[in-house]
Length: 158
Image (cartoon, rainbow, N blue to C red):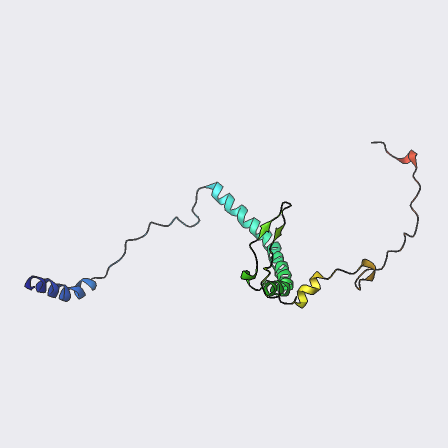
């Protein structure tokens, strides 16, 4: 026991002195010089990618806005579908038919499914015929002048 007391006391008193010496971690490798690359291919590729991204940025922004608007419009329908598929335990495992369709059948002992939401019902409603739609454009007027008759003398043979 005496043999352990002396080393323990030395560690206790010398530990603050060792910690006070200030440890510096080794330096990382030198970073490559900024802009000093001699590789023309690297500079050309960098320039190409910057130009490509600069030209594509407005189109990507518009695409993002359009997709956001579409997902925003579909959000109520997706919520209704989520409510309709209430609990996975009420359904059998999916089965694939020969024609590639996938069926997910509801179990016979499951409670009745929840009612359809308004957004999903509106989406599943068939569209009215073209002539009854409120936003349908009126039929186009006939052309003011009939087309000229075909003149074989003025045609070019291909």
